[in-house]
Length: 63
Image (tube, rainbow, N blue to C red; front, side, top):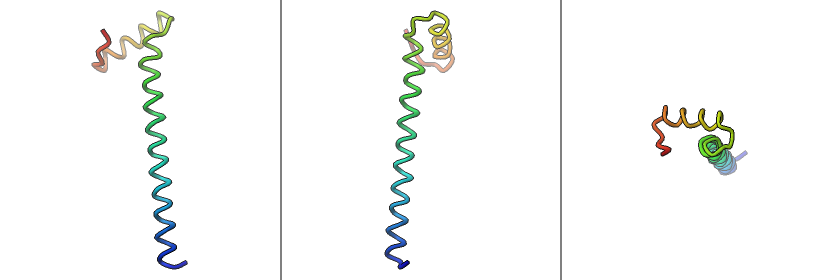
């Protein structure tokens, strides 16, 4: 392997890692949004109350 091919392989690996980090971050963002808003607007009163209390515990305004 030459130096040029090693550099190319290293940059492709770095790009792949960056892509995985972005995908993981987006997944976490959507999962968190679902937990906050999905559970907050749930029809089950117990689920809604639990989400409501957690939102207040974190200082997230909900009303």
